[in-house]
Length: 302
Image 1 (cartoon, one colour):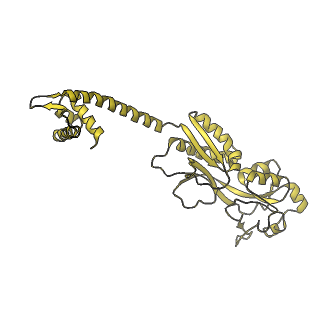
Image 2 (cartoon, one colour; image 1 turned 135 degrees about the vertical axis):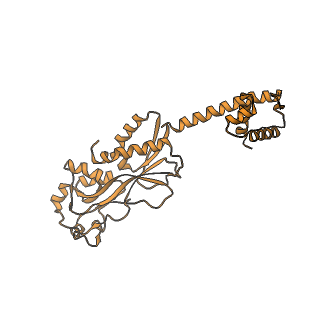
Image 3 (cartoon, helix red, strand yellow; image 1 turned 30 degrees about the vertical axis):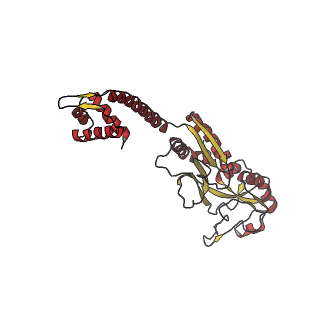
């Protein structure tokens, strides 16, 4: 038995003073409402309303039950209003996971703006370059930089795109010479990012078979792009950086592009979050904010 609905029906009968009027108000038949009342009384084992052909009146038990019904139903309605209000409020703790270099270089100023926009929100940011189990670790949103995502039960929204840029310091190229083609890279010192999805491949100059310009034994392997950038700026070799790190360093003259005419390997920034029929307002607000502001931030326009 749907006790709360039966309680609401009983309350309406008492308030309307008539079973027929209450049935009309509830948009149901008098017979159906009468059946609900009898079922409620049978469930309670007590007569709530004395009914005759001419009038109806509450029993003492019915009057006491009516008072408690009103109290409980009013509290339930207040609770539902509170929950619905909270469900529309961007508040609470938002747990986000993001790559270290991306978080420090791109997300940091955006997060400050986001938190000023939603002062009721609390942020818990975890920076980790390795892919993590977003659901298992309780993250609301995980930011991933990938060429493509593996099949998953998670929802993924593409926010922006980036490229891997082959670059080196001017001092290194002055010392070792500028490579004039993909094959010439094999004679150079290579710095590689160990958490890459795979070899930093790109087409040959003739657009034919794919080649691996960073193949062979790397002079330095590092699992953080910021450290890789610093080592490249110190002239240790040639390596591939994400465009959001390469572009500022190139603009400052710290690095220069190597083989700039080669097509760049594309990657995308995704927001990944658990499947939910009702997306939490804090998650929706965060992902929508990034979708709006992230492309400009990665171009250095914000």
